[in-house]
Image 1 (cartoon, one colour):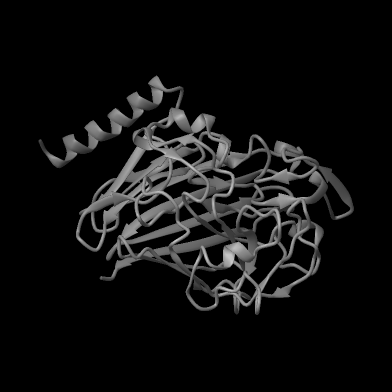
Image 2 (cartoon, helix red, strand yellow):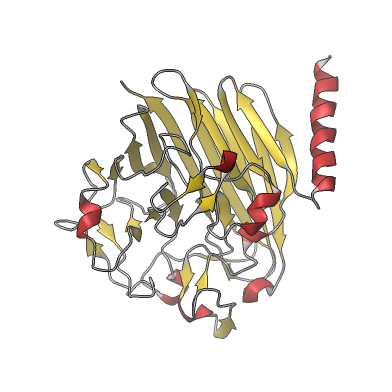
Length: 358
């Protein structure tokens, strides 16, 4: 079969699957033994397959086998979350003298853009290059003025690309079309470097290049303070096995769910964010980004979730490292602004570099 015929077969195959599933489909990009699957529902990462230290392939992202199954997901598995990731206190904010009331989908607060946020809509596949030196897929979503209460229309896009050696590049962009509006997109992949079905990540080693956190109240809303991590269970400036400090978190906490202030975050330059190491698989994930913060979440509320291959995920089955603007920044003038004015471009870039060590 010629290259052209192969391309047409794959393209029409995806279109046929999308038609059968009400517009939902899975798309794959592949570079040798390194492959990524994405669904257009929430522009979600559905799987990422790469070798361990023995050369054995494994999928290191929690998720589901089909695009349709993601519609019932409540944990934002692999999703692009927005228009504003994380929490907004009281589901409201004031911008240019106008109070905007949003949809409250977590008590009195908004979480990850509301119940119909970017993770719960079908994105349009703009371009899909499955093979080649740098295979990639670009998806777009047009969010209209007033959606979930936010002002102005925006055009958002995300591109996932595989580059050598074993590196995933994620580029998120959004343009404010007619009004000033907050934009804060995050990638909500659940990582387990031992394989998605290998159980707890508490034995993984974690390093986060952040000397401070934004403390939160009981509703996980930032207090506005910037606090040092030194001599606290939040200190991952040097690599630490997660199950050690997690025991010293405040009483009642199920695990980590906190925003770290990335060191030297000012400006849009790329900088190291975190390193995760799984001893059994030998896989190492190095994360870098140009965002000021990163949310560490240790899958605290995963409870009997039936995932890929019928495997049942439990609490701490994965960790999330969601690079982002600070939570609730729209209500904290001292935090880095997430307001994008008409004509401006929101630009958020992440690099996930994978290696192995014996």
